[in-house]
Every structure is written in C-alpha cells, then in structure tokens.
Image (cartoon, rainbow, N blue to C red):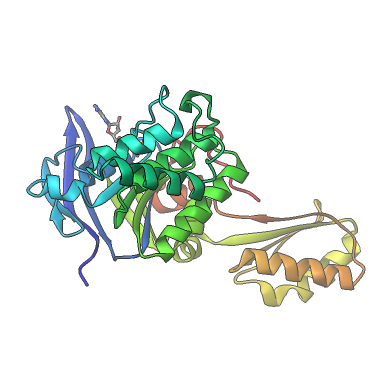
Length: 323
Ligand code: ATP
C-alpha cells in the first residue's frame, strides 16, 4: 500500500527566512506521525503545504494519492484539518458551525444536520449544541474544531498542535478521541511541542529543527537515543541507599546514580511507569521509608540539546514534562 502522506525535499522560503530546508516524510496509512519541534521549526509550514494552503518552492508531496500542487482540489476533499488556522465561527452555535462545514462539502442540508448531530454527540457537545461558540471553553472549542475536520469523514487528518492550551483532563480526552479515529483506519499527521503527546499518540515521531527532520523513530527509540526515562527515589535514611540500589539494579538499563548527600537514587529505565510501580512495591515490601518518588522523562529541551547541541528555544511552560 502506498503511504498516505509523502514529502520529498520540501523547501519553503519567506524572504530570507528558510522555513523548510529539505523536509522528507512518509506516513503509512492508518498510522500517526508526530512532527515534534519548537516554535519556528517549520511544523506549521509543513502542514500548510500538505493541506494545499501554501505552495512549496521546491520538492514534492502527496496526500491520499494526490499531488499537493497538481491535484490540490481533489486532495482537499480527502483531508480534514484542525488547529491554529482552523476557524470556528464565534457567532454561530456549535451545531451551525458543523452544518456549515457540511454544506461546504456539499453534503446537503439533511445530511449536514445529521452529521453535525452525530459529531456533537461523539465530542460530548450535545448540551452546548445550540449555544454560540463564543461561550465555549478552550476544550470545547478544540473539540468543535476537531469535529469540523471530521464532517466529511476524511481518510487523512492534519492536527496542528491539537492540545496546546488545554488542561490535562481535556488533553487526555482529546488523545482518546484521536486514538479512536486511528483505530478506525484514519491516518493522522499532528504537530506538537509536547514530548508526552508524541509519546502517547504517535507510531512515528519526526523531530523537526530548522526546517528539516533531524531524527525519526518511535518515541521509545528517540528516548533510548537520549537516555530514556529515569526513576528518581529520595529516601529518608542513608543506611538504606546501598541496599535499595542493589535491589533495584535489575530494573536499570544503564548505571544507577546515587547522590549520597541528597539520599537520592536515579535509575535509568526503559518502561518508566512499570519500573516506578515495581520500585515502590519493593520499597513498601521492605518497609523502607521514601521521602519522594517520581518519574523523570526526557523533556523536549533535552531531546533537542542531545540531538542538536542547541537549545530548543520553546517558550516557558512547554519545557517540563515531568509526571
Ligand atoms: P510554531 O510552533 O510557532 O507554529 P512551527 O514549527 O510551526 O512553529 P512555522 O510556523 O512553520 O514553525 O515557521 C517556520 C519559520 O518560518 C519560522 O522562522 C517563522 O518565523 C517563519 N515564517 C512562518 N510563516 C511566515 C510568514 N508568513 N512570513 C514570514 N516568515 C514566516
């Protein structure tokens, strides 16, 4: 089966700024590719080219079998897009917004209304269906925006920073929705600044820096490349440190670091959540007191620093992905 999305050597310049500098991508059908990168890396420009809103200066790309330049009109009927540039009309109700999209796709009045109702229900917006969108919360707007992208049932979806600005609960809800679409066979390309989001949703992560892909792999492969998860345990007694270090050595995928002064052990692990559970179980069984326990995951900054040798330059608030 040909890939649902391909890009070869895409170049885009804005005056002196080289937004894309040889972007290559290939996304198999029914999978999720995450473009992970800081502000200005070229993620949105890539999405705009793949959704025909912009023409590349060089290179070529196809989506759902259509060339982004030569078959632009046919391509547009096969995709849905949601994100930074997608428009929810504030003055229309949720239902009216979706019906309008249906009409734009020539679904007809009845089918548009029916499709709107289905999607409002699926996105838990039925109660708010007849209220103007301007009164919606951030999470509700995102859901409405995603619903709008699904009106025509497109086989390929583009989601530009789908959960930026959402609270953790709304974010988790949206992740579940996206995972459900993919389980149904939809191909998704999403952009994100969140390592955790790429980790949760993507089959493949393309780390983007300065307009090109600088690393490609599963989230686990990338994390392994940069050191992976760490379980951090802070004990209350120095006497326990050595014994715990030995007991948990089998969990580690590298050297366990012990900070005697801070009474802290740092254990590099491959499956962080499982390892943390095992570590805590072991400590509880041994009656060993713990002051603090947690999982440290590589942040986007750490990914960048390791892969590029320079800081990502992401704004505050996007850096800490600890959990
Ligand atoms: P963000 O997370 O901020 O959306 P991004 O990774 O999506 O970042 P792009 O928006 O694709 O990055 O921008 C890539 C580069 O192109 C940046 O240096 C940006 O300033 C520049 N750029 C994007 N759009 C324009 C434009 N319309 N005119 C001039 N420069 C632009």
